Length: 485
Image (tube, rainbow, N blue to C red; front, side):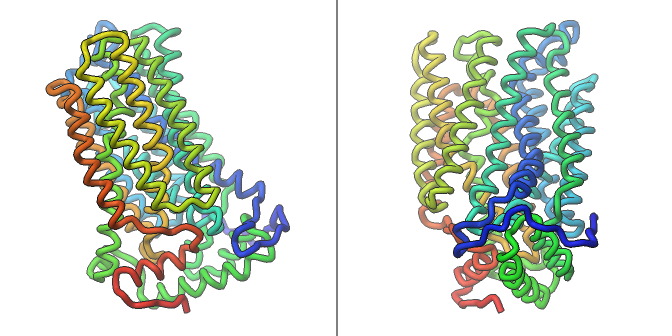
């Protein structure tokens, strides 16, 4: 871990105004961009498989791996199964080693996993390589949002953490676009290998960039390193705000220190156990929307409606474009002060409606119109998912857990994101082959229940410091008002 011996000067001397005019330093923006390269890799590695699978189903003579429908599901789901383990253990490593060190380790795993997938000689090797890559994807999904939430001023936390979601969908758009271009301009034999190999480039950029990024001040305080925390804050805050914010962080860190280091044993504490169950519920239901059935298998679905492989790959680019635009709208809503709960609930209603329409469109007679109606239903679904559900569920999972076990609890909850994702990835190819459009009606029924859950249980964390959120969550689940002193 890097230790600076001299205090860094801030690049902006703007003063705060109740947290509303938090400093907009160039350094904070650059740090956010570098850290969210982990999100870009997350998005690319999960999105690229949608274009690679049709070529991997070809025979070995044609440069493929001769995948069956069941093996397609295994190749897609092996990454998300690895991500479940990566999220759980990545969260624990980030609590022990620090957020920065963990992200740098993950960059190395991203690089090795991408190359292993690109050179995979057999289906079995590919499944193992995708699992390895999944460890990095899961670790990044647990570590990067927490790092950003701890880095950001309270008033800008929603926007900054949501940049990670923007980078995730940007990575998916990059994957869809590169898939289409590679399929058009390179020979069919081995096209999928180039698609998978490209992920090694941003992995190198992430590792190099993180060398210049400060560690989380809150993590330093959890280790009793107040001077290092002050130097870290000086990299991202106006000078006038540093001591006030540090005092609040220190008070909370001292209270957590009196309670002891966080571990899974903390789940014996009733209010923490209930809070973790709430996080797991948010995590699982975000995936039971069926989002990854569309993100991973969009070309497969469109091919089934009658489009050619080339046309399906180019049509899938629209999914990536809509996702990027939608996340940008979600970030804009957060910047305008809209609360987490109303965004979440409105998005859930919209995507459930889109799933019903997708099911209806699939029942129409096969035609070019049907193919484009199905694509339109996907785009409507992705608009609500990526503008409302995607940014908010990652944000909530980075906000609601107490500092002393934030990495562990976030990692545990996000591991369930990937477990649910694995289940959906495994069963979707089988369901769409067996019952076709009725698959989307099944997802719609699940999401009606999710809508009710959000109305009842989703918390509101807007404009609260992480220390205040922690106190409010404890009060919510114990009925006892806690102070930060």
